Length: 455
Image 1 (cartoon, rainbow, N blue to C red):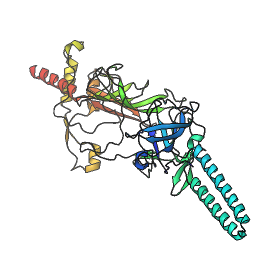
Image 2: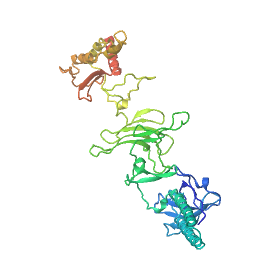
Image 3: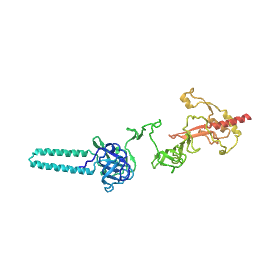
């Protein structure tokens, strides 16, 4: 019987090419490397199965050379008609196994042993050996055969003897080592690739987490640069300047609506890293959402740390029904005042100057009602300004705008310092609010007071 080395759970991945010695690329999960268990100079059965190219396979006998590569001394069977396969690039597995020839040699050895036992029995009978002695010899032979059967049953099944498949079905099972035996694990218990090309996980998926409570839990293993652990990284594979487009996303997290019944199905929102130039070190972070079209509204945190809208003079900061409570700033807001962008109408009319002086008389202290409700009259702070409806009334009395109607809604006004907003909430109820642009109103009042002082 051939004297070849064998050991359990020896299987490595390989990406080497050609028909010569193959460089082994490390043990598969739950297995050992050849170099860790195979004695120097020992020959063994090997089985190579293509993963990327499932049609490439080979079995035979080989050994490890001084560099730890698999040297294929003899090919028993292969996808190349029994000759050595010139493997192409891609992933393949290399297993230490028991070849079909070894099983044939075992059968021959067992048949020889059985023949020897029969000859011995005939000789012993001829010599007058008792039936009891013959029974003892037969029992010993049967025990030896049983030992061989047990040894063979304990070996890993020969995977290269089966047909190949490029995808996994839900009803499939994988045979794995457990203790001293083997168990079948259903594909539904594993993350596996289906015929459609996607990877399927029946339960919650944990990366770095053994008991995930959500559909996907990703836990970082160590901190980077003293900060929090990196949990998720989105990377591109572009190399060099070819194909780069300024301001295009090179790494993005998409939020997609795949329901064709939804208007504008597709990527409805996106967080993306972009380059403001064709190819360089500067990187912006762009937040995009969909309004009239897909990803047509955006805000950008640029590479200088500035937060800006996605387009010039096209987006507001806050809404009439969703206001920021306080803005903290080291300096005031800068408003466009370029003469090249203005159609000048001249100074205020006599009626406008009268209205300005009357509005100045409306200035006074006040407290916000919600502040009183939260802090009490003594705790709520006193502010100074005007009541928007009073300003509106003065302007209407001077014949400059329409008065507020009986329904509480104002008419049209050409004055930008008079503001009115109306909106509908999630329950369908309507709300409205009057307001003023304080900077413009203050200049209007100054003009009225200056004109009055000069009269």
